[in-house]
Image 1 (cartoon, rainbow over the protein chains, first blue to last red):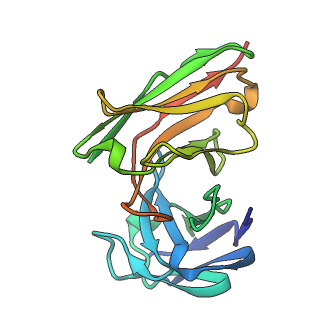
Image 2 (cartoon, one colour):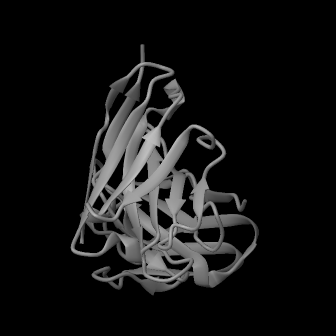
Length: 108
Length: 119
């Protein structure tokens, strides 16, 4: 089982700032099977990025993903008020499809 | 696409509960489906999955031997039979549809149903 470790645990930023979230896998994984999800307070998670760098339907272009091997990054270029949420990474190339523990992006 | 979970509630330790996920807007049997849970204030934890052909059923180590995933094609529903419930099973349980194909992201999520295990 691939263990995913996200950092930092909490990111305190202001609207308009850039957010950089990291996810490290315990072993090298296929970048074609790596995703990011956003979970706003009181809501179900929603798919943001799949295949490391592809935005899901309806996701604005201020969200971007990159990475390979064991290190992956989610970047939000300019934080909007609705972007303050918890973000999870996921590797879905093997069973079980594990998640990272989450990074909370909070308003500074 | 819509996924609506039901069946959650309060149950005593050692008890059983059956969750159901009603799917609409697509044919459930054509997709791999999953259950993911989230304990209060915690992160996402994969629970169980079933392939579109029902040949493979996957369980996390934490629920293996206690939970059973199944489908009812006639009702287009996904079920999770939970037994031997423990306090640590307390969580919101989400029904999740995987994108078409194999080893794809989780593209649709239900709103979840809360299971509380307490005496």
